[in-house]
Length: 93
Image 1: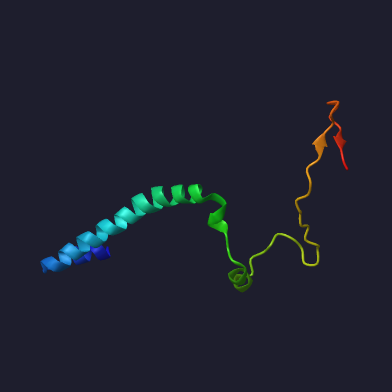
Image 2 (image 1 turned 90 degrees about the vertical axis):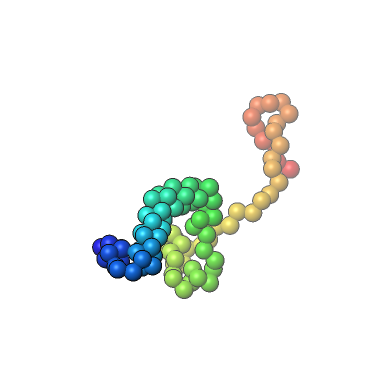
């Protein structure tokens, strides 16, 4: 509606501005938001949802756990070696 009223203006500069603005909005809606943005989100994967600590505190992002429950942290340890006899048992030293 707004682009149509601008395109009907008597000055050619305003008509060109309205046409360019309308094509820009059409390009943004059809190509960028429909094709490029979803593919970019798929490419960057998990990093798309990364939020630093201080903004998360400002917006109070839920962590998915109840307050007061302990946070389990997995630390890497030595990998167990397979049983030399091949019985599927593990030998721990």
